[in-house]
Image 1 (cartoon, rainbow, N blue to C red):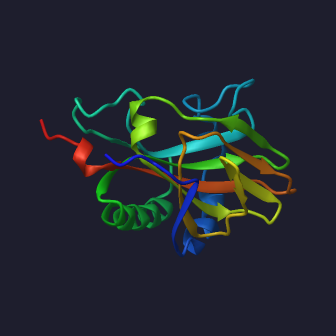
Image 2 (image 1 turned 180 degrees about the horizontal axis):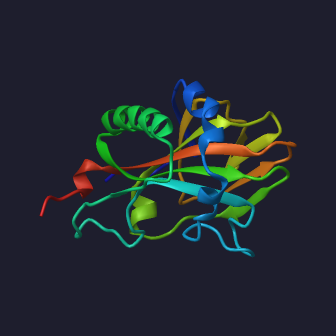
Length: 187
């Protein structure tokens, strides 16, 4: 497997208008099932998330590749997410791992942190803004950008990365992890 030597890789801009238009269909209570990412004092204390697909963080290449599909998102949103997943699986030569919508509160911050563990260090982590603003910045290493809606960036999540939403509106990103095919073994 190749070593990562980048902060951001831009792939393309996806049409996310249908996902954005239908965010209001998500039941508010669904955003609260996010204990996997968030705790009230930790890195993700200003975030809420909803999983679309899920694989345990403990997954590694010696284990069977099995993902769970969540029913927490409306079908219209899931269908649009799957179209993006299929394209990223082809571009990045892999299979989806975790995919989720992540909400960052207005004036919210995700402090600098690096992701560790086999799964998080091995997957290709893609961020696609669904709803954002010009006052929201994303930093990886020593590089900071303002991602526009629909732009797909792979980030090196093993490096220190952070997000700062200085805007008055929440930010929603679609996060899609692609596991390289070379790490997936059929059992």
